[in-house]
Length: 377
Image (tube, rainbow, N blue to C red):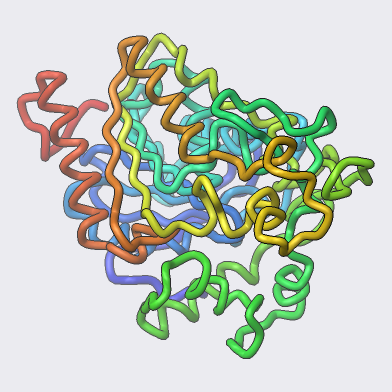
């Protein structure tokens, strides 16, 4: 059993889609905030954040399928983010608490926060279910064109087969460490070192007992072709692998992941975009992007910047949100200096303040009389 902060508790619920493990915190009369974790992570990464937010929010953080302690169902990459967003919909519309009450009251519009991969699930949810969201919070979000293999702000693929994205791009040494149950810090690809050296901008410090819990959250990840990282196809194009049809990293491939339609949705919840300027995972020159690694000479055979530039991930997100704003939506961007890929872990007080202020201001703009207390959304 995971050690959780005071006020945060774990539940297991059944839906027509799956068995879901989730964390909850706060009073259900408060506005509902659904927190969706990123890749190679779990809901446990949000526990301390939820303990702080519980004064103003009713927080729900599920483990996505194949992550944490939720059911190890396969991910159909051909559906992009829809396996995850459909699971979220079933959770929010079908699940009941231990008392038998609805987990979320019927008809309530919820606020959704997506971190990294989780932001893709949130954007897909907004595209597929107009009117369901009161607000959207994107924390270090993946590009609307997924991860890897695109060259410009419009998401144009570098190669016709989307080579350089998908299941074959995962670090095999990190997968080996997860399979081995590595809880130490002797190897640079161990979960502990990934958390402190890649997810956060070093020097990145958390309480040792919290890091222990986050490591366990990573080690619970389902490994294989149906989950993380997914299958892969050989390609004649650099760097030699193209996406398959199964698993998480293929669902992130631009071959299947296209969230740019968010810019054109007719129901337009306000958007808050938070990111760190030292993010090594999502940036315009990400340390884990093959285009950037090829440019640095780390991956041999790079065909050059005209053929395979680093993916402009931040630029792609900004271009989409600018289209969203031009169509009548609104967004605000918060750039956190010196912060890496995990603002909620690295700058917890500032992070919690910013998203609660975002909600209060959005409700005030919409004419809510009581922006802090119980709300109908």
